[in-house]
Image 1 (cartoon, rainbow, N blue to C red):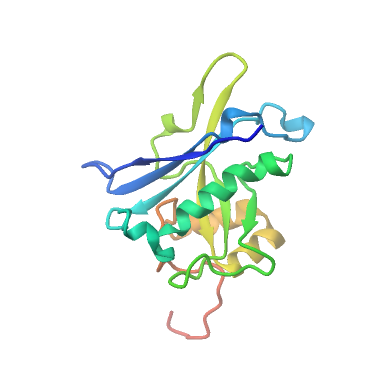
Image 2 (image 1 turned 90 degrees about the horizontal axis):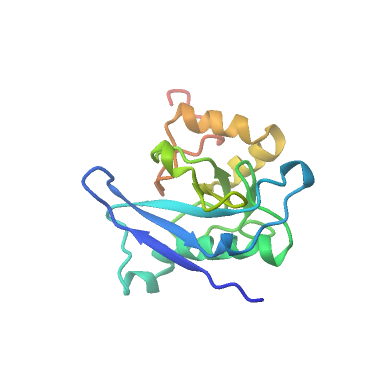
Length: 186
């Protein structure tokens, strides 16, 4: 059975100065988690983009603007194509070796985290007794951050994000929290 995926777009609002892109269709079928996580079968992914991100039809023809959507679509298919699951703490590189998503960004992978900037009520949607859909944030990563996560675990990387107030709202110029600087005054 071929799954159909869409990306919903929630435009910025007065109290939310960013676009929210949310997958739809990933939760149509259960994922295949390990037995001890059997209740973690249904999820949708989302990413937030700055209010000035060009999401127009013309803008979407440019890879510099389109990469978050391409990433969401690939991730939504991933657990079903590979009979696996995606959950907070997981990371996925953009290839082997990892390459930047677009020419204007240094991000070459993602990590999934629980919602950070969203209202706590956004974490899950109970459909019925058997099905709860969890919403998971997609956080773009630099290669050094991916390597750090693999070596030290996702919680240690999440702590670094917390220290620098990094959340699911994409900032293509954000600090790489794992890159060493030789400049003594930074």
